[in-house]
Image 1: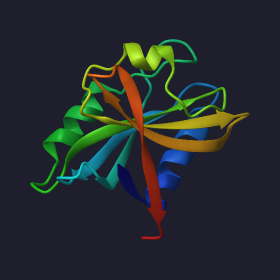
Image 2: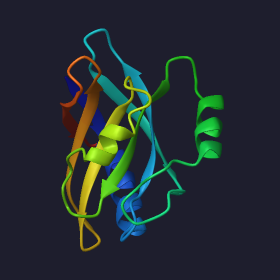
Image 3: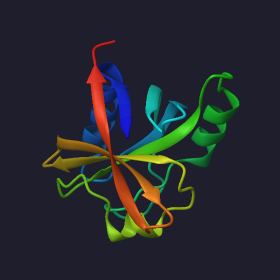
Length: 141
């Protein structure tokens, strides 16, 4: 499975999580998913992180509501992004425990010393009880 992510939107994600460091940064991903399960990202919306502590994230529900109300017919909320402040862009045990909407995609950015070092995308497989990785294809918009 692939995720098409325009480079300017990847830069928004990177800037959001680097600015949030040493806390986790987060936000929402809007776009579409085709019949093959490939995702196309059309916008990313940063959100304040409402979670307590440095190693958790919680998207502001007001941001989500605003995004969902503003969707056009060809788009939908397809996922969210957040950072891991240990530099590893892999789902954590905490992430596994936070899968409430398994259809949503996860972009995780590893941040080390305030700098994004790795970006990866996943979707949770409810049958296999694990995250499956998406290939990210970025391009200049």
